[in-house]
Image 1 (cartoon, rainbow, N blue to C red):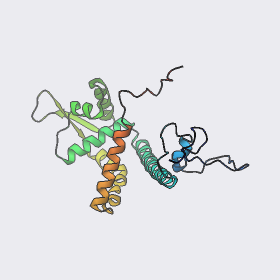
Image 2: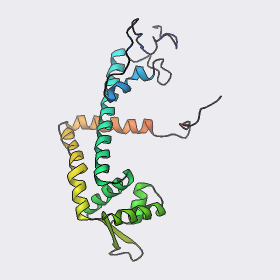
Image 3: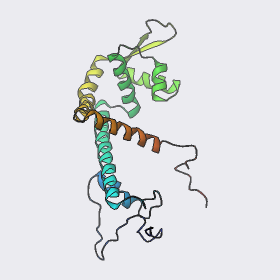
Image 4: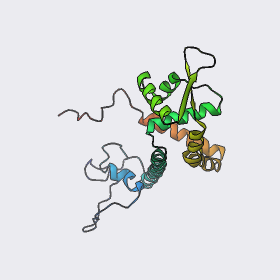
Amino acid sequence: MADAGSPGDGRRSGRRAAPDGARTTDLDPGPGAVYDVVANDPDGDLVDRSGVAPEDVAHISELMAALGELRATEKRIAEASRRYMQLNETDMMALHYLIVCTNRDVVATPGGLAKHLDISSASTTKMLDRLERAGHVTREPHPTDRRALAVRITPGTHLAAREGIGRQHARRFHAAARLSRRERDVVIRFLRDMTREIAPREDDRPVDDPGPG
């Protein structure tokens, strides 16, 4: 059985020691630089990589960097859209929900919005008050339920959102279409598996919990 190395000597994790005098003052530019597996966990304290070949660790780092680049691009698009629309993230999520309801001929309600956004009824009312004052949504009697209101996105806001962030995000379709069905199945399985892996668990320590002293 090969020696996996001691926890601190770098062999277990595949950590590469920098030559004398080889230190640099900054990381390479771009989001990928901070997603290198070994750079984030040099001693293998977070993930035991003893059974993973160094070339596979490097390949996984490349995958993590690609995910980071995608998230960074989506963040830039979302921030630009929010600045243009002068709305916050929750507002934009609400408008997206209303657009989908419109496209599917579904009557949106404040209760449905609250559930989708995972916010309280009071917060939903305040948000809709703000969006209505800005001319982004309208509220009117529900066509079939007298106890409810129907919430609709205004045509102007619908067009602005569709031609802005909507058209940019729609380009993702082309990347997915270039894959075969088998390749898409692999991507779907990977993304769902990663979602399960990083989802909070009951035994997870809260991020602000320093742990045992």
